[in-house]
Every structure is written in C-alpha cells, then in structure tokens.
Amino acid sequence: MSVVSYEKHGAAAVVTISNPPLNVMSQQVIRELKEAFKSLREDNEILAVILTGAGDRAFMAGADIKEFPNLIGKKGIKANFLEGHAFLNEIEQFPKPVIAVLNGMTFGGGCELALTCDLRIAEEHAQVGLPEIKLGLFPGGGGTQRLPRAVGAAKAKELMFTGDPIDAAEAKRIGLVSYVVPKGEGLQKALELAGRMTRHSLPALSKIKKAVDEGMSSTLEEGLDLEAGLFEEVFQTEDIKEGVQAFIEKRKPAFSHK
Image 1 (cartoon, helix red, strand yellow):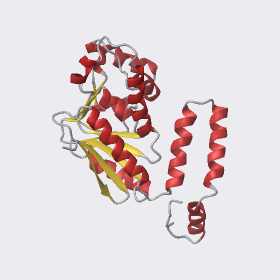
Image 2 (cartoon, one colour):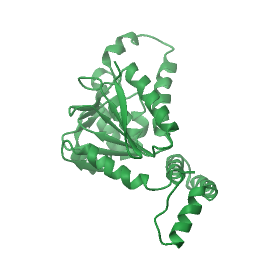
Image 3 (cartoon, helix red, strand yellow):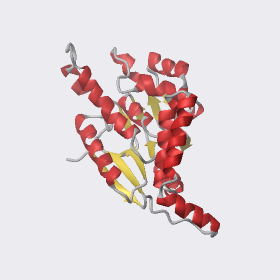
C-alpha cells in the first residue's frame, strides 16, 4: 500500500504523507517521497510543491523508532546516515518552491523534513520539536545544521537540549514558520501562496532559490558573484523576453518557463 501520494492543483502539486497513525518517516515513506519529488521535478506543468501529512494529528511525528534497534551498537554506519542526508538534500535543492503545511505534530525527522522546505505554514494546533535527546540521541537528519540557520544558534540549542516542543505561535515568533492559520486551513493558505508564486517564471523562481540557498553558506562577496552569474543566465531565457515585452505592452505576461 502506498504511503505517499500527490495531486495537482493547477500549477501546484500537493504531496501527502499517509503513514498512520502519525505519518512517521519509515524507509517506505523516504522511498516514495523520493519518487514523488523526482516525478514533480520532471513535470513541466508543476511550478511549486506543497508537502503535508494526512489527517490532522501529525505532519510527521519523527522517524520510525522501531527501525532503531537494528542500528544500536553497530559501527561503520555513517554511510547509512549520509544516505538520509542525501534524501533531505534532494528536497532542499528541489528547483521549485516547496511549502510545508504543518498540520499537527512535527517532531524529530518531521521537523528536519520541514526545515528542508522553503516556507512553512503551521496550523494553530501544531507542535514542533526535536525530542531526540529524550532517547539518548540527538537530531541526525540535519537538525543540528538547518535549525540554527533558521532560528539562530541559541534558540536551536535550547530546543535540542531540552527536547521540549513549541506551539505554532512560538514557532512563528522565532521565525521557524511564516504563517499560523486555524486548524484545517493550512492547505488552503498554502495553495493561495503557491498561486501567487506560480504566476511567475520558473527559471526566475529557481534562480532566486539557488542564489539564496547557496549564498547563505557563502561570504557576501561569493554570494554576490553567484547572484551576478545567475542574473546573466536569466537574461538568456525566453521568459525575460516575454516579461519585458508584456510590461511594455501593458499586459500580463504569458511565461513559457523556458
């Protein structure tokens, strides 16, 4: 039985994780998420992706702890963990905007998955946290690296040192999520936001994402050089011709996304 599915809403796709009861990140979920994102990467009709969990209890309540006993005491398994990083990196580097809708518990691996997305929307009942410390672990799916970049080192350490979750309002206050909406309205908000993105040129959207993401881990000088190179590239696209011509003719552009 499939645990990941997607459906199209115009130029946006909604990817839903359905692994009851709490949508944990099993190996099957990882495999099917990779397949879904691969298909959507190649789909020229899709310009943005929304990622959420089925039901209203959890976006994703962490990894599948039942898989952990097989790892205890083993050495030489760093490569296994790097495979997990490679999967999350694929989503982070996906060349189209990705919006996460946190519609319930977003713990551990679920929080780390959400951190790979460009924007996060939380429903008001959502809880977000990295509770690995309570199992004698620490976040091993990029949490120690992505969370400090999102909320600052001190707050990230507090969340990881205590393992205590925060509510949606606190997540917004610290900049972890962009919007908090009533229960059940996260997908509607995400589709509205995606609609404001997908009316634009995909090459430009992709280059914005690349410039910001790669620039954040560079010096300012390196980032500006990256931006200048990408700016040169965008001037070679069909969409800039259409965008400029539409502006001159005082009409809406009809982008071909080329």
